[in-house]
Image 1: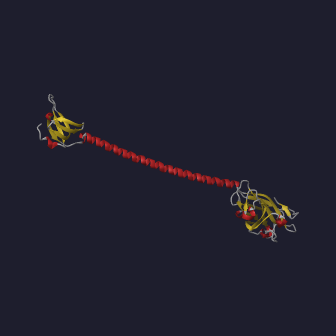
Image 2: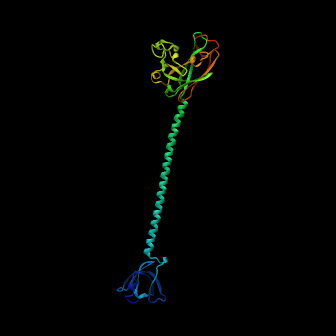
Image 3: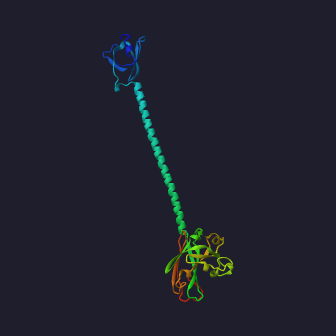
Length: 300
């Protein structure tokens, strides 16, 4: 093929027809004409098989054409492959990051939920243990009659805390009495004294040392008094706290509760409940004997 005509086709996609000497059939090469070397007699073609050279004297014809998707060059294919791999890599990375985030959120939710359940279970367990172990026990109930021994005017209820119970605030302990009417008594912090104060008996215990007012007289229809039988650390008289091993007498004024008879008559029954703030209550139900033979009567 003559010179000077092929420069016009450099950079274009062409169909090149070649025929080697001695061959009967021509062959066709499609690709981009990159360069023409007239000196050495070669052209440089970028075809689908790669970059190659063709001898000018074997070229029969060159026809420019339009590139189709089926006739992509080696560089185009390599570039497309790289782009496709890049897109796949980005998609995979996005999916991986999403999976990591979902796993992190799920793990955070599980950890938070488990910690919350653990704390709740611990709190419920502690409250249950306190509810079961805490409470009050009634050891004895003693009555004190009037001078004529016709009615029981006062009750002394011996109370202690249950084994294993924590210290208890006496100001939260209520005493309910049932006899014809229902009465609810609360602890009066000013009506408390140690046993044997001024060498007096339980039913003659003054509200303070040297006082002429007894705990019996100070107890009313709405409050009860306390005599500390055993209070090693002084918590009952100083802070109104009932500790482990402490024992008290709760003094109840029946003359204020039972107005019509001035006290509990013989053969009559009365019941009550000592309810702490937390735990099981102490219950009692008793009857006065048919004959009150002495001023101090054991009713329990």
